[in-house]
Length: 424
Length: 189
Image 1 (tube, rainbow over the protein chains, first blue to last red):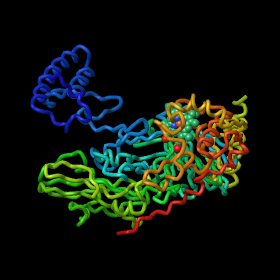
Image 2: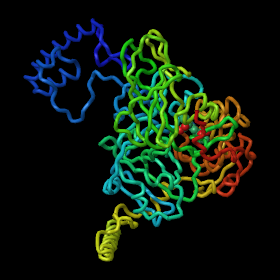
Image 3: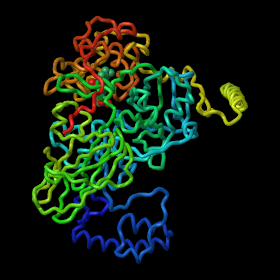
Image 4: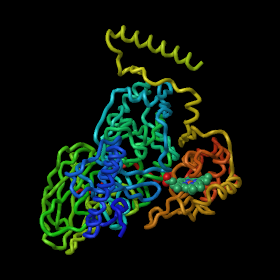
């Protein structure tokens, strides 16, 4: 019984402490308090703060001085939500633990093709060449001097929910939908930089390449991305996280995540797509007839109930059904929720802000009476596109297209309150 | 020397900028090329060092050559641990076979069954493989291992010499297997 609060893993139950743990905690906090006071007399207040709050909470926080300021903040030691690494190439955002629409940078999903590089910003350069007046290079300091733009946008991996094509595989909302996250992205408009360099008016495609060990590369049609694409150096108010492309990444709002090339080091303008492996062998959608769709960029409207969701257990009585909806084509216009496997639907409330190409939070008040039910959500975007049910989606695309699965998600609530992933 | 060049350039740019201001009678028009005066011209060397993409036309292919025979040995040493002795066994991506499976319940997507362009194979193997040491192969080595992969897939003969001239001409079995995005494609309920 030497269990220590900090040693409790992320999957260590539902976060509640049992009675034994609690009494242990009190005893330890008393000891820590005494030690802290002695320590404070000897070593100053920093010591007290660290001992008293990062290891163990005092019995009564109103009777013990709190922590002093810190150089770079951390979340409460009691919060345990973490990304789940899926393998060496990705990790998933814990959507079931999220509130509002923003994803903390530290929980933004990851996808990389040969690891996260360490790049010195002072040495990083962006090369712009091909169909331009003259090849041109920018240091990070140059890029930061341009007029800046900023917006909230989701980024979703085109493989998000990909395992669901073949069956209800993911246990939690994190597993089924965790390859999407929302941040505020700040940088310089692509258009500004291309104008500065002097783009040839006949250029129609742009190759974007990363400075990682995969030299990750995609071709992008200029006419579609020119108005909205951003060369980003900041995320949620601070420089990009290394996993998100530090020091520079492309953002193409609403398009599949892999188009938003991270660790961006090169833009080459041309007349035709460059046909890299990432737009031929990968990120193409195989149809039942054996042909594949290419350059399927936009992420179509999708929603998921994050609470209650897979892996949770609910109690009878009032609860608020909560979830996220988003569309790569524009704003979410409405979200409907069904508590009877899609026989009837009720309008959910959309929470402000409701922004284009951005996660949108929805709510619906509900009372669970202990019956076996299936919960679903479906969304409509402002182009009139409605999120399809699984049967309709599979009827058109079969189950082998890997990418762009955006069918209605079903959560089954059993009589004992356990929530699980089903296909209904 | 560099500094001198840069100074000359800066003076030149500033002159142009001031001339622009006088001419326009106001602040420089920032819609103009180099209106912000940020960044600098890239040197030929800088462009050459990073300009590694290879287009379906063959543009970007370097000098050099190789055959499947030469590639076999290289594959065994540098690639087989991850892709299997014959390129089929894994544990990583299967590279060989799968012809005729794309419309089946269990499609096998490989270089032979799925890839539309042979040039892409040069581009990708050079930029990203072998996985632990990307961009470490010489042009001759890349041509050779690409030849071996195409030969094993039944696309070229064992003695076909691949180089910047022959590679773009190779027609891949699934060249016509791709179509543009037709979405939205799911009928409304």
